[in-house]
Image (cartoon, rainbow, N blue to C red; front, side, top):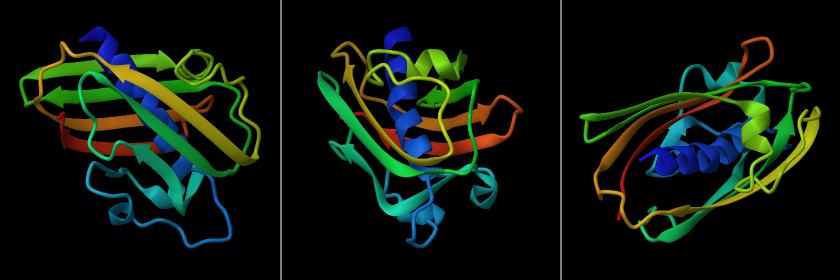
Amino acid sequence: MKHFALYLILLFLFTLLAQAFPTQQTFMAPDDHGDIWSLCETPATHLLIGYKGGVTISPETPKVGSDIHVQVKGNLLKDVVGGKVDIDLSLMGMIKIKKQLDLCDVLGSDVMGRKDCPLKKGDLELDATAWIPNELPKLPLEGNIRISDQNGETVTCIHLKFKLA
């Protein structure tokens, strides 16, 4: 369970970061992200503003015993020199996963391709791949992952809701 939570956090961190990168396209509404995730809190206040089509998750339905790959492209509104990743997830409403990670540690992990901290203002591209262990139960998962910067401002926040295949 510990490894799954870390993998899931890291993978969706990319998704969150991708949402925070603005381009010349229209701001993504919460329902523009697909079936397994949406923006949470107040997306208009996020430091990472995403573009339509700026986030790619494959496969679309995460599966045990396989990799999940997330690509994010966007524009960060200001430098992020540190921060936190707060994970608050629930498996089938019974198994709670609450964890707080250091943002720079997450970015520097193998899953994130050892991305350097700080993240500089402007265009940003992130790429992550993680293995979802076979041992994980195929249960519904729901909850939020919030990324905050060094000042506690929301870089991005995503709400997840799906069942592992």
